Amino acid sequence: MDLKDIKAIIDLMKKNSITEFELERQDSKIKLKRGLSGGASAVQYDEPGVPVIQTIAAVPAGPAAPVATGEIEIKSPMIGTFYRAPSPEAGNYAEVGTEVGADTVVCIIEAMKVMNEIKSEVKGVITQVLVENGKPVEFGQPLFKVRPN
Image (cartoon, rainbow, N blue to C red; front, top):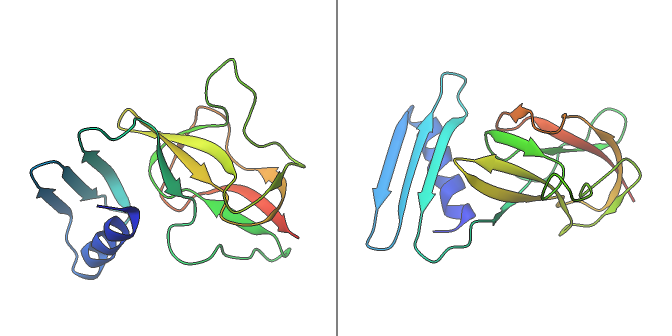
């Protein structure tokens, strides 16, 4: 099951007011729960042989939304803990002034003990980091602002 399928399931859950969804197959299991705010509150996905770090698209639905200043927000595709670097000793993935491309990893969000690399999905320059390292983030919460180029 890929990210596109998971997003489709989440959309169906929202449209039909379903708060919990679980699917089990021979080699995989996915469980989704929605909170009161309407966003996914917990996501669990287990599949043997899948690496611990998964890559998740940074924009949950469609292209990034332009902000009034002409900047684009990179939003969290999930609930979890925001980390700017791959480890405490390593440098940050992105700083203010860093040029990013569509495939540039800008941060990690830890969700249910899984580290998920978040990609920019836009081309431009980081103008603002909106979340403090180690802080919890919500689904759809802006993480960075990018000036497109």
